[in-house]
Image 1: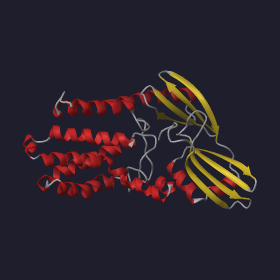
Image 2: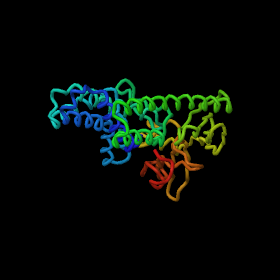
Image 3: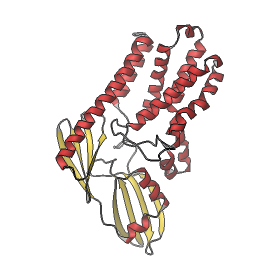
Image 4: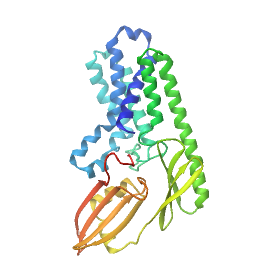
Length: 322
């Protein structure tokens, strides 16, 4: 999910912690603040790995949502953060609740990221595979509004924490369940449309009735959009030939990183004045007929790699958002 959503859910998770806390705890306001700090920091800790971006986008792609989101770090982040929070808020006697709510924040963060199309290596070290349930967009306006409304109703005293936050989280899991169900229904219809040959998957959009789909065959990627029960095929991307230039580019370290991140890639090759350019584009992040996320590799006439670039070929405010 986006940083704003993780920050917001960290705050509302703090409200849930308050709603479930022993009433005697409210005689120690610093402990209450400590619980809120625990959920906020826990809900954002897995994304602390974004600092790796200072080493370049290639390192960011290789490591972001990797070890920091792994099975080990579900407990690792609380082990690091909980003592610091307890020390900062003079709450050593409540170290265990602070540890547990920090873990709740980390787990919920990874849980939300798992449902994005971007994916997460959440089962490391057991598996380094990227897992993505393709159910929730990077920014889900319904989830954001739900949690923002609950927080505002609490802050303005309309409802107490015990009334609003359990209700908000019950609706959250119900909404995610509905999205899973809708996604399975839509995917079933895509597979019926194109037959059993090939592989189909969905990419969620902002509202539950809107999706993008990809159907992969041996020769091409067929892409389209869904609005309610309306299916619209929009673009077909040929997989392209496998020639000596493309094979030479495949040995590049950056290409291996990119192909580890995604297995749904459109590859094309262009002849330049003094060599070649191989373009790899991630089919998942499509906008119309454009594939703005990917990697370019340049090679000389002897098929030696002379450079590579990886990242987005779009303005930051332009779709798709991932």
